Image 1 (cartoon, rainbow, N blue to C red):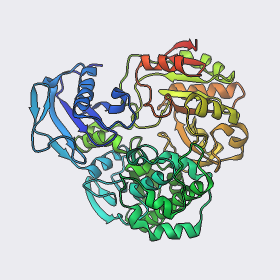
Image 2: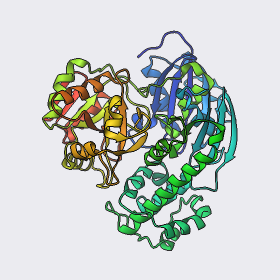
Image 3: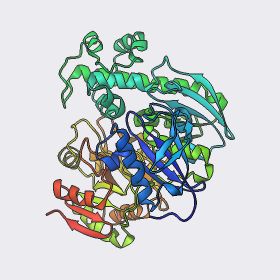
Image 4: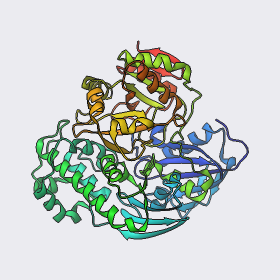
Length: 504
Protein backbone atom coordinates (compact mmCIF):
# COMPACT_ATOMS: atom_id res chain seq x y z
CA UNK A 1 0.00 0.00 0.00
CA UNK A 2 1.19 3.54 -0.68
CA UNK A 3 -0.10 6.89 0.46
CA UNK A 4 -0.01 9.93 -1.77
CA UNK A 5 1.66 13.16 -0.77
CA UNK A 6 -0.33 13.92 2.41
CA UNK A 7 1.67 14.39 5.57
CA UNK A 8 1.32 11.56 8.06
CA UNK A 9 0.22 11.43 11.67
CA UNK A 10 1.82 8.59 13.65
CA UNK A 11 -0.02 7.66 16.85
CA UNK A 12 1.65 5.30 19.34
CA UNK A 13 0.48 3.39 22.38
CA UNK A 14 3.61 1.85 23.92
CA UNK A 15 2.43 0.31 27.17
CA UNK A 16 2.73 -2.77 29.35
CA UNK A 17 0.67 -4.85 26.93
CA UNK A 18 -1.15 -4.59 23.59
CA UNK A 19 1.06 -1.83 22.18
CA UNK A 20 -0.12 -0.51 18.82
CA UNK A 21 0.45 2.12 16.15
CA UNK A 22 -1.95 4.01 13.91
CA UNK A 23 -0.86 5.94 10.83
CA UNK A 24 -3.23 8.42 9.22
CA UNK A 25 -3.43 11.55 7.19
CA UNK A 26 -5.53 14.30 8.73
CA UNK A 27 -8.52 13.06 6.74
CA UNK A 28 -8.13 9.27 6.53
CA UNK A 29 -7.03 6.35 8.68
CA UNK A 30 -4.46 4.38 6.68
CA UNK A 31 -3.37 1.63 9.06
CA UNK A 32 -3.90 0.34 12.58
CA UNK A 33 -1.13 -2.11 13.47
CA UNK A 34 -0.99 -4.09 16.69
CA UNK A 35 2.51 -4.94 17.90
CA UNK A 36 1.60 -8.60 18.32
CA UNK A 37 0.93 -8.93 14.58
CA UNK A 38 4.51 -7.82 13.85
CA UNK A 39 6.38 -9.39 16.77
CA UNK A 40 4.49 -12.69 16.88
CA UNK A 41 3.67 -12.75 20.61
CA UNK A 42 0.10 -12.23 21.73
CA UNK A 43 -0.44 -9.20 24.00
CA UNK A 44 3.31 -8.65 23.81
CA UNK A 45 5.12 -6.42 26.29
CA UNK A 46 7.38 -4.73 23.76
CA UNK A 47 10.85 -3.30 24.31
CA UNK A 48 11.82 0.10 22.92
CA UNK A 49 13.66 -1.58 20.07
CA UNK A 50 10.64 -3.73 19.27
CA UNK A 51 8.36 -0.70 19.31
CA UNK A 52 10.65 0.99 16.81
CA UNK A 53 10.30 -2.14 14.68
CA UNK A 54 6.51 -1.84 14.78
CA UNK A 55 6.57 1.86 13.85
CA UNK A 56 8.88 1.15 10.94
CA UNK A 57 6.77 -1.82 9.85
CA UNK A 58 3.81 0.55 9.63
CA UNK A 59 5.69 3.23 7.69
CA UNK A 60 7.30 0.78 5.28
CA UNK A 61 3.97 -0.89 4.62
CA UNK A 62 2.74 2.51 3.44
CA UNK A 63 5.86 3.14 1.39
CA UNK A 64 6.84 6.01 3.70
CA UNK A 65 9.76 7.04 5.86
CA UNK A 66 10.39 9.61 8.58
CA UNK A 67 10.32 12.47 6.07
CA UNK A 68 6.62 11.86 5.48
CA UNK A 69 5.74 12.25 9.17
CA UNK A 70 4.23 15.55 10.28
CA UNK A 71 3.11 14.75 13.83
CA UNK A 72 3.57 12.08 16.48
CA UNK A 73 0.93 11.31 19.13
CA UNK A 74 1.93 9.29 22.19
CA UNK A 75 -0.46 7.88 24.80
CA UNK A 76 0.55 8.91 28.30
CA UNK A 77 -0.44 5.84 30.30
CA UNK A 78 2.39 3.35 31.01
CA UNK A 79 4.43 4.95 28.23
CA UNK A 80 7.93 3.52 27.99
CA UNK A 81 9.17 6.72 26.37
CA UNK A 82 10.63 9.65 28.28
CA UNK A 83 7.83 12.08 27.44
CA UNK A 84 9.93 15.07 28.48
CA UNK A 85 12.17 14.46 25.47
CA UNK A 86 11.57 14.41 21.71
CA UNK A 87 10.56 11.13 20.08
CA UNK A 88 12.97 9.87 17.42
CA UNK A 89 11.85 8.22 14.19
CA UNK A 90 14.91 7.50 12.12
CA UNK A 91 17.01 10.64 11.86
CA UNK A 92 14.17 13.01 12.81
CA UNK A 93 12.93 14.08 16.22
CA UNK A 94 9.37 15.06 17.09
CA UNK A 95 7.89 16.80 20.10
CA UNK A 96 5.11 14.35 20.99
CA UNK A 97 1.48 15.32 21.40
CA UNK A 98 0.51 13.54 24.63
CA UNK A 99 -2.88 11.81 24.61
CA UNK A 100 -4.93 10.59 27.58
CA UNK A 101 -6.01 7.03 28.29
CA UNK A 102 -9.73 7.50 28.82
CA UNK A 103 -9.91 10.12 26.07
CA UNK A 104 -8.38 7.60 23.67
CA UNK A 105 -10.86 4.92 24.71
CA UNK A 106 -13.71 7.40 24.25
CA UNK A 107 -12.32 8.15 20.79
CA UNK A 108 -12.91 4.55 19.74
CA UNK A 109 -16.65 5.18 20.20
CA UNK A 110 -16.75 7.93 17.56
CA UNK A 111 -17.88 5.52 14.80
CA UNK A 112 -21.20 5.36 16.66
CA UNK A 113 -22.13 8.69 15.12
CA UNK A 114 -23.75 9.75 18.40
CA UNK A 115 -23.66 13.53 18.84
CA UNK A 116 -24.73 13.14 22.45
CA UNK A 117 -24.33 10.04 24.59
CA UNK A 118 -23.06 8.56 27.81
CA UNK A 119 -19.76 6.70 27.64
CA UNK A 120 -18.90 4.12 30.26
CA UNK A 121 -15.13 3.71 30.25
CA UNK A 122 -14.41 0.54 32.24
CA UNK A 123 -10.75 -0.38 32.46
CA UNK A 124 -8.00 -1.75 34.67
CA UNK A 125 -6.11 1.43 35.55
CA UNK A 126 -4.58 4.54 34.02
CA UNK A 127 -3.68 8.13 34.81
CA UNK A 128 -7.45 8.69 34.60
CA UNK A 129 -8.24 5.91 37.06
CA UNK A 130 -10.08 2.71 36.19
CA UNK A 131 -13.79 3.22 35.55
CA UNK A 132 -15.79 6.41 35.02
CA UNK A 133 -19.00 7.52 33.36
CA UNK A 134 -18.71 10.39 30.89
CA UNK A 135 -21.26 12.54 29.10
CA UNK A 136 -20.28 13.47 25.56
CA UNK A 137 -22.26 16.30 23.98
CA UNK A 138 -21.24 17.57 20.51
CA UNK A 139 -17.55 17.14 21.24
CA UNK A 140 -17.60 18.27 24.86
CA UNK A 141 -16.64 15.53 27.33
CA UNK A 142 -17.59 15.74 31.02
CA UNK A 143 -16.91 13.11 33.64
CA UNK A 144 -20.16 12.66 35.56
CA UNK A 145 -19.10 9.86 37.93
CA UNK A 146 -16.00 8.06 39.18
CA UNK A 147 -16.75 4.37 39.69
CA UNK A 148 -13.51 3.12 41.24
CA UNK A 149 -15.01 1.40 44.28
CA UNK A 150 -17.37 -0.82 42.31
CA UNK A 151 -17.43 -4.19 40.57
CA UNK A 152 -17.08 -2.42 37.21
CA UNK A 153 -13.30 -2.33 37.04
CA UNK A 154 -10.79 -4.40 35.19
CA UNK A 155 -8.96 -4.93 38.46
CA UNK A 156 -11.86 -6.82 40.02
CA UNK A 157 -12.25 -9.03 36.98
CA UNK A 158 -8.50 -9.43 36.53
CA UNK A 159 -8.00 -10.39 40.18
CA UNK A 160 -10.79 -12.96 39.89
CA UNK A 161 -9.16 -14.30 36.74
CA UNK A 162 -5.86 -14.53 38.60
CA UNK A 163 -7.60 -16.59 41.27
CA UNK A 164 -9.39 -19.00 38.93
CA UNK A 165 -7.65 -19.64 35.61
CA UNK A 166 -4.34 -17.75 35.30
CA UNK A 167 -1.93 -17.12 38.18
CA UNK A 168 0.30 -14.76 36.17
CA UNK A 169 -0.66 -11.16 36.88
CA UNK A 170 -0.10 -9.67 33.43
CA UNK A 171 -1.74 -12.54 31.55
CA UNK A 172 -4.70 -12.56 33.92
CA UNK A 173 -5.34 -8.85 33.53
CA UNK A 174 -4.53 -8.44 29.83
CA UNK A 175 -5.43 -11.62 27.99
CA UNK A 176 -7.21 -14.32 29.98
CA UNK A 177 -10.30 -12.58 31.35
CA UNK A 178 -12.18 -14.15 28.45
CA UNK A 179 -11.29 -17.56 29.83
CA UNK A 180 -12.94 -16.73 33.13
CA UNK A 181 -15.98 -15.44 31.28
CA UNK A 182 -16.26 -18.76 29.46
CA UNK A 183 -15.75 -20.68 32.69
CA UNK A 184 -18.45 -18.70 34.50
CA UNK A 185 -21.15 -20.40 32.43
CA UNK A 186 -20.24 -23.74 34.02
CA UNK A 187 -20.90 -22.57 37.58
CA UNK A 188 -23.77 -21.08 39.54
CA UNK A 189 -24.16 -17.76 41.31
CA UNK A 190 -23.83 -18.05 45.09
CA UNK A 191 -25.44 -15.13 47.00
CA UNK A 192 -23.46 -15.83 50.18
CA UNK A 193 -20.21 -15.89 48.21
CA UNK A 194 -21.24 -12.67 46.46
CA UNK A 195 -21.73 -10.95 49.82
CA UNK A 196 -18.24 -12.01 50.92
CA UNK A 197 -16.68 -10.72 47.71
CA UNK A 198 -18.51 -7.41 48.02
CA UNK A 199 -17.22 -7.06 51.57
CA UNK A 200 -13.70 -7.54 50.20
CA UNK A 201 -14.24 -5.38 47.11
CA UNK A 202 -11.56 -2.83 48.00
CA UNK A 203 -9.04 -5.64 48.12
CA UNK A 204 -10.22 -7.04 44.78
CA UNK A 205 -9.69 -3.57 43.34
CA UNK A 206 -6.02 -3.72 44.31
CA UNK A 207 -3.40 -5.13 41.93
CA UNK A 208 -1.41 -8.22 42.87
CA UNK A 209 1.62 -8.65 40.60
CA UNK A 210 3.19 -10.85 43.28
CA UNK A 211 0.24 -13.29 43.29
CA UNK A 212 -3.16 -13.82 44.87
CA UNK A 213 -2.38 -16.72 47.21
CA UNK A 214 -3.87 -14.90 50.21
CA UNK A 215 -7.19 -14.42 48.41
CA UNK A 216 -7.23 -17.94 47.00
CA UNK A 217 -6.76 -19.38 50.48
CA UNK A 218 -9.40 -17.10 51.95
CA UNK A 219 -11.96 -18.30 49.40
CA UNK A 220 -10.98 -21.96 49.58
CA UNK A 221 -9.60 -22.22 46.05
CA UNK A 222 -6.83 -24.76 45.55
CA UNK A 223 -3.35 -23.88 44.35
CA UNK A 224 -3.80 -26.17 41.31
CA UNK A 225 -4.56 -24.33 38.06
CA UNK A 226 -6.04 -26.81 35.59
CA UNK A 227 -7.35 -26.73 32.01
CA UNK A 228 -10.51 -28.21 33.57
CA UNK A 229 -11.10 -26.01 36.64
CA UNK A 230 -12.84 -27.58 39.61
CA UNK A 231 -16.31 -26.80 40.91
CA UNK A 232 -15.31 -24.13 43.49
CA UNK A 233 -13.53 -22.17 40.75
CA UNK A 234 -16.54 -22.48 38.45
CA UNK A 235 -18.92 -21.17 41.10
CA UNK A 236 -16.51 -18.37 42.01
CA UNK A 237 -16.28 -17.31 38.34
CA UNK A 238 -20.06 -17.49 37.93
CA UNK A 239 -20.62 -15.37 41.04
CA UNK A 240 -18.18 -12.65 39.98
CA UNK A 241 -19.66 -12.56 36.49
CA UNK A 242 -23.26 -12.28 37.69
CA UNK A 243 -22.37 -9.52 40.16
CA UNK A 244 -20.51 -7.68 37.39
CA UNK A 245 -23.56 -7.87 35.13
CA UNK A 246 -25.95 -6.76 37.86
CA UNK A 247 -23.81 -3.75 38.74
CA UNK A 248 -23.51 -2.81 35.07
CA UNK A 249 -27.29 -2.73 34.75
CA UNK A 250 -27.67 -0.76 38.00
CA UNK A 251 -25.17 1.87 36.86
CA UNK A 252 -26.70 2.03 33.38
CA UNK A 253 -30.15 2.61 34.89
CA UNK A 254 -28.87 5.24 37.32
CA UNK A 255 -27.44 7.45 34.57
CA UNK A 256 -30.12 6.82 31.95
CA UNK A 257 -31.82 10.22 32.58
CA UNK A 258 -28.75 11.93 31.08
CA UNK A 259 -29.01 10.30 27.65
CA UNK A 260 -30.87 7.64 25.69
CA UNK A 261 -27.63 6.52 24.04
CA UNK A 262 -24.71 4.68 25.62
CA UNK A 263 -21.26 3.61 24.45
CA UNK A 264 -19.12 1.17 26.43
CA UNK A 265 -15.33 1.29 26.00
CA UNK A 266 -12.20 0.05 27.77
CA UNK A 267 -11.05 -3.51 28.26
CA UNK A 268 -14.16 -4.44 30.25
CA UNK A 269 -16.25 -3.78 27.14
CA UNK A 270 -15.06 -7.21 25.99
CA UNK A 271 -17.48 -8.80 28.48
CA UNK A 272 -19.94 -9.89 25.81
CA UNK A 273 -22.34 -11.62 28.19
CA UNK A 274 -22.78 -8.45 30.24
CA UNK A 275 -23.10 -6.49 27.00
CA UNK A 276 -25.89 -8.79 25.85
CA UNK A 277 -27.85 -8.29 29.06
CA UNK A 278 -27.36 -4.54 28.74
CA UNK A 279 -28.54 -4.56 25.13
CA UNK A 280 -31.67 -6.53 25.97
CA UNK A 281 -32.48 -4.51 29.09
CA UNK A 282 -34.35 -1.89 27.08
CA UNK A 283 -32.67 0.89 29.04
CA UNK A 284 -31.18 2.62 26.01
CA UNK A 285 -32.46 3.25 22.50
CA UNK A 286 -28.94 2.94 21.07
CA UNK A 287 -25.82 1.20 22.38
CA UNK A 288 -22.41 1.14 20.74
CA UNK A 289 -19.39 -1.02 21.56
CA UNK A 290 -16.40 -0.62 19.23
CA UNK A 291 -14.43 -3.37 17.52
CA UNK A 292 -11.31 -2.46 19.49
CA UNK A 293 -12.44 -1.15 22.92
CA UNK A 294 -9.35 -2.36 24.81
CA UNK A 295 -5.87 -0.86 24.97
CA UNK A 296 -5.23 -2.38 21.53
CA UNK A 297 -7.31 0.53 20.18
CA UNK A 298 -5.53 3.31 22.09
CA UNK A 299 -3.55 4.73 19.16
CA UNK A 300 -6.63 4.64 16.95
CA UNK A 301 -8.85 6.48 19.42
CA UNK A 302 -6.19 9.17 19.79
CA UNK A 303 -6.16 9.86 16.05
CA UNK A 304 -9.94 9.85 15.79
CA UNK A 305 -10.24 12.33 18.66
CA UNK A 306 -7.75 14.74 17.13
CA UNK A 307 -8.84 14.39 13.51
CA UNK A 308 -12.53 13.46 13.28
CA UNK A 309 -12.41 13.15 9.49
CA UNK A 310 -10.34 9.99 9.97
CA UNK A 311 -13.15 8.14 11.78
CA UNK A 312 -14.40 4.99 10.07
CA UNK A 313 -16.76 2.20 11.08
CA UNK A 314 -14.70 -0.41 9.24
CA UNK A 315 -12.97 -2.93 11.52
CA UNK A 316 -10.62 -3.97 8.70
CA UNK A 317 -7.81 -1.49 9.34
CA UNK A 318 -4.80 -3.82 9.47
CA UNK A 319 -2.35 -4.70 6.72
CA UNK A 320 -3.60 -5.76 3.29
CA UNK A 321 -1.14 -8.00 1.48
CA UNK A 322 -2.77 -7.89 -1.94
CA UNK A 323 -4.84 -11.05 -1.47
CA UNK A 324 -8.59 -10.67 -1.94
CA UNK A 325 -11.27 -13.34 -2.15
CA UNK A 326 -14.16 -12.51 -4.47
CA UNK A 327 -17.66 -13.82 -5.06
CA UNK A 328 -16.11 -16.18 -7.62
CA UNK A 329 -15.26 -18.39 -4.62
CA UNK A 330 -18.74 -18.42 -3.07
CA UNK A 331 -19.90 -21.66 -4.69
CA UNK A 332 -16.71 -23.54 -3.86
CA UNK A 333 -16.67 -22.29 -0.25
CA UNK A 334 -20.31 -23.18 0.29
CA UNK A 335 -19.78 -26.65 -1.20
CA UNK A 336 -16.77 -27.26 1.04
CA UNK A 337 -18.59 -26.07 4.13
CA UNK A 338 -21.75 -28.05 3.38
CA UNK A 339 -19.57 -31.14 2.91
CA UNK A 340 -18.35 -30.72 6.49
CA UNK A 341 -14.93 -29.26 5.77
CA UNK A 342 -13.32 -26.80 8.17
CA UNK A 343 -11.96 -23.94 6.08
CA UNK A 344 -9.65 -21.03 6.78
CA UNK A 345 -10.44 -17.77 4.97
CA UNK A 346 -7.70 -15.21 4.33
CA UNK A 347 -8.81 -12.11 2.47
CA UNK A 348 -8.30 -8.35 2.44
CA UNK A 349 -6.98 -6.29 5.33
CA UNK A 350 -6.67 -7.87 8.75
CA UNK A 351 -9.14 -7.00 11.47
CA UNK A 352 -8.45 -4.44 14.19
CA UNK A 353 -9.23 -5.81 17.61
CA UNK A 354 -9.34 -9.36 18.94
CA UNK A 355 -12.14 -10.82 16.82
CA UNK A 356 -11.84 -12.43 13.42
CA UNK A 357 -14.70 -10.89 11.43
CA UNK A 358 -14.30 -12.80 8.17
CA UNK A 359 -10.87 -11.78 6.90
CA UNK A 360 -8.69 -14.03 9.08
CA UNK A 361 -11.28 -16.63 10.04
CA UNK A 362 -11.73 -20.34 10.58
CA UNK A 363 -15.22 -21.29 9.37
CA UNK A 364 -17.34 -24.43 9.68
CA UNK A 365 -20.99 -25.46 9.58
CA UNK A 366 -21.88 -25.79 13.29
CA UNK A 367 -24.28 -28.71 12.96
CA UNK A 368 -22.88 -30.75 15.89
CA UNK A 369 -20.85 -30.26 19.04
CA UNK A 370 -18.14 -32.42 17.47
CA UNK A 371 -17.46 -29.47 15.16
CA UNK A 372 -16.75 -27.25 18.18
CA UNK A 373 -14.45 -29.87 19.66
CA UNK A 374 -12.55 -30.23 16.41
CA UNK A 375 -12.15 -26.51 15.78
CA UNK A 376 -11.71 -25.14 19.30
CA UNK A 377 -9.94 -27.95 21.12
CA UNK A 378 -8.08 -29.82 18.37
CA UNK A 379 -7.22 -27.15 15.79
CA UNK A 380 -6.94 -24.12 18.09
CA UNK A 381 -5.87 -26.10 21.21
CA UNK A 382 -8.13 -24.18 23.56
CA UNK A 383 -9.67 -25.26 26.85
CA UNK A 384 -12.88 -27.28 26.60
CA UNK A 385 -14.95 -24.69 28.49
CA UNK A 386 -14.30 -21.89 25.99
CA UNK A 387 -17.10 -21.19 23.50
CA UNK A 388 -16.88 -20.46 19.79
CA UNK A 389 -18.94 -17.85 18.00
CA UNK A 390 -21.42 -17.79 15.12
CA UNK A 391 -21.64 -15.46 12.16
CA UNK A 392 -25.07 -14.86 10.66
CA UNK A 393 -26.67 -12.46 8.22
CA UNK A 394 -27.88 -9.32 9.96
CA UNK A 395 -31.41 -9.92 8.72
CA UNK A 396 -31.48 -13.30 10.55
CA UNK A 397 -30.70 -11.99 14.05
CA UNK A 398 -34.26 -12.19 15.39
CA UNK A 399 -34.76 -15.59 13.75
CA UNK A 400 -31.88 -17.26 15.57
CA UNK A 401 -31.24 -15.19 18.70
CA UNK A 402 -32.97 -13.08 21.32
CA UNK A 403 -30.96 -9.99 20.43
CA UNK A 404 -31.83 -6.29 20.40
CA UNK A 405 -28.93 -4.79 18.43
CA UNK A 406 -26.89 -5.87 15.43
CA UNK A 407 -23.45 -7.14 16.41
CA UNK A 408 -21.07 -6.46 13.50
CA UNK A 409 -18.01 -6.58 15.77
CA UNK A 410 -19.00 -9.69 17.77
CA UNK A 411 -19.54 -7.65 20.95
CA UNK A 412 -22.81 -9.11 22.31
CA UNK A 413 -23.71 -12.58 23.58
CA UNK A 414 -27.38 -13.34 22.99
CA UNK A 415 -29.57 -16.25 24.06
CA UNK A 416 -29.99 -18.76 21.25
CA UNK A 417 -33.48 -19.65 20.10
CA UNK A 418 -34.72 -23.21 19.64
CA UNK A 419 -33.89 -23.49 15.95
CA UNK A 420 -30.32 -22.43 16.69
CA UNK A 421 -29.89 -25.00 19.44
CA UNK A 422 -31.28 -27.72 17.17
CA UNK A 423 -29.39 -26.85 13.98
CA UNK A 424 -26.19 -25.23 15.27
CA UNK A 425 -25.27 -26.67 18.68
CA UNK A 426 -21.55 -26.08 18.12
CA UNK A 427 -21.93 -22.33 18.62
CA UNK A 428 -24.22 -22.40 21.67
CA UNK A 429 -22.38 -22.23 25.01
CA UNK A 430 -23.53 -24.23 28.02
CA UNK A 431 -25.50 -21.22 29.32
CA UNK A 432 -27.50 -21.05 26.07
CA UNK A 433 -25.78 -17.92 24.74
CA UNK A 434 -23.68 -17.19 21.67
CA UNK A 435 -21.24 -14.35 20.95
CA UNK A 436 -22.89 -13.28 17.71
CA UNK A 437 -21.41 -11.59 14.65
CA UNK A 438 -23.96 -10.14 12.25
CA UNK A 439 -22.92 -9.32 8.68
CA UNK A 440 -24.70 -7.04 6.24
CA UNK A 441 -24.03 -7.20 2.49
CA UNK A 442 -22.14 -3.91 2.55
CA UNK A 443 -19.90 -4.94 5.48
CA UNK A 444 -18.67 -8.29 4.16
CA UNK A 445 -20.29 -9.14 0.80
CA UNK A 446 -18.42 -12.44 0.47
CA UNK A 447 -19.39 -13.82 3.88
CA UNK A 448 -22.99 -12.72 3.43
CA UNK A 449 -23.12 -14.46 0.04
CA UNK A 450 -21.62 -17.67 1.46
CA UNK A 451 -24.28 -17.75 4.19
CA UNK A 452 -27.00 -17.34 1.57
CA UNK A 453 -25.46 -20.10 -0.55
CA UNK A 454 -25.47 -22.42 2.46
CA UNK A 455 -29.17 -21.80 2.97
CA UNK A 456 -29.74 -22.71 -0.67
CA UNK A 457 -28.03 -26.04 0.09
CA UNK A 458 -30.42 -26.80 2.94
CA UNK A 459 -28.16 -25.63 5.77
CA UNK A 460 -28.97 -23.01 8.38
CA UNK A 461 -27.44 -19.71 7.18
CA UNK A 462 -24.99 -19.72 10.05
CA UNK A 463 -21.31 -20.51 10.46
CA UNK A 464 -18.93 -21.11 13.30
CA UNK A 465 -16.42 -18.25 13.03
CA UNK A 466 -13.24 -18.06 15.06
CA UNK A 467 -9.86 -16.43 14.55
CA UNK A 468 -7.14 -18.07 12.49
CA UNK A 469 -4.62 -18.80 15.23
CA UNK A 470 -3.81 -21.37 17.87
CA UNK A 471 -4.22 -20.59 21.55
CA UNK A 472 -1.61 -18.15 22.81
CA UNK A 473 -0.58 -16.92 19.35
CA UNK A 474 -1.68 -13.77 17.52
CA UNK A 475 -4.15 -13.90 14.69
CA UNK A 476 -2.57 -14.74 11.32
CA UNK A 477 -1.53 -11.55 9.52
CA UNK A 478 0.41 -12.44 6.35
CA UNK A 479 -0.23 -14.90 3.50
CA UNK A 480 2.86 -16.83 4.57
CA UNK A 481 1.47 -17.20 8.08
CA UNK A 482 -1.84 -18.41 6.64
CA UNK A 483 -0.06 -21.04 4.54
CA UNK A 484 1.87 -22.12 7.63
CA UNK A 485 -1.37 -22.40 9.58
CA UNK A 486 -2.77 -24.76 6.93
CA UNK A 487 0.36 -26.91 7.05
CA UNK A 488 0.57 -27.07 10.84
CA UNK A 489 -3.08 -27.57 11.86
CA UNK A 490 -5.98 -29.82 10.96
CA UNK A 491 -8.01 -27.35 8.90
CA UNK A 492 -9.07 -28.98 5.63
CA UNK A 493 -8.91 -26.09 3.18
CA UNK A 494 -7.40 -22.61 3.05
CA UNK A 495 -8.91 -19.97 0.79
CA UNK A 496 -5.98 -17.63 0.19
CA UNK A 497 -8.04 -15.09 -1.64
CA UNK A 498 -9.63 -17.06 -4.49
CA UNK A 499 -6.89 -19.67 -4.40
CA UNK A 500 -8.13 -22.93 -2.86
CA UNK A 501 -5.37 -24.80 -1.02
CA UNK A 502 -5.88 -28.25 0.50
CA UNK A 503 -4.04 -29.47 3.57
CA UNK A 504 -1.08 -31.62 2.51
